[in-house]
Amino acid sequence: MDRWALLRLALSVVACGISLYWSLGLGWLPCDLCWYERICMYPIALISLVSWARRIPSRPYTMPLAAVGGCVSLYHYLIQMVPAWSTSTSCTSPVSCATPDFVVFGFITPPLLALVAFLAILALDVLGQRGRRA
Image: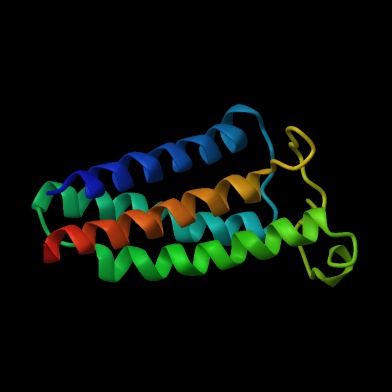
């Protein structure tokens, strides 16, 4: 398969590994929106692995998951960083969706990292499709 598929596979596996390390290694409990982000990211890793091994396109499956995951991540980031949005969450887990467990440089939180990963996966899907047409 092309290099874009391999990059998507690597990126999604790293994103899944980091989220598992935060949960299992550091003991952080994920909030509701974190679970939704994981529900979108974990299948991308599995689909990317299968499509890379079988040399079949995965764009029809990974692109919608990345788009939905990106929207959830953007919403999650906004309720964490914009005070007016923090009251709009209906998080039912014991961990608040509006309170970040981890902040670097005052603005980098797990939802922002997930958003960047989802956007990168979308970009890799587009680049991979463009490479197949050429």
